[in-house]
Figure 1 (cartoon, rainbow, N blue to C red):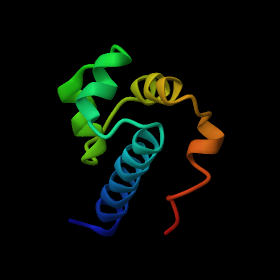
Figure 2: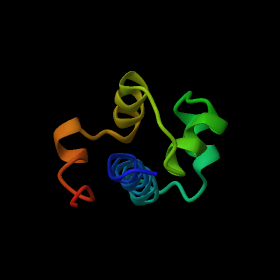
Figure 3: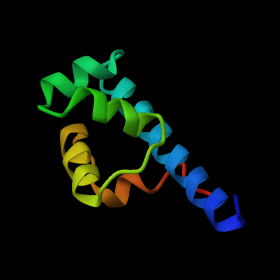
Figure 4: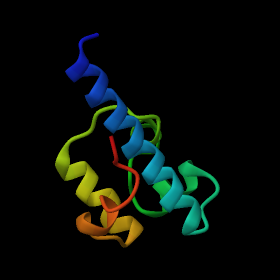
Length: 80
């Protein structure tokens, strides 16, 4: 894996960690219940939290369910 791929993978992991953190802060200890209650595909959402790639439109939908803006979402957890 080259340096750019490693950086991209790290940022995807950061994204997944941030999603998990926010979900738990919102009182959802189970990602499947969160996805179900917000009409998100459960298996797909689980992959997002594990750091797999996702489309921008999917991220926007998840952030809306978490009631957080893009700006606020990216304020934390995305350092080098």
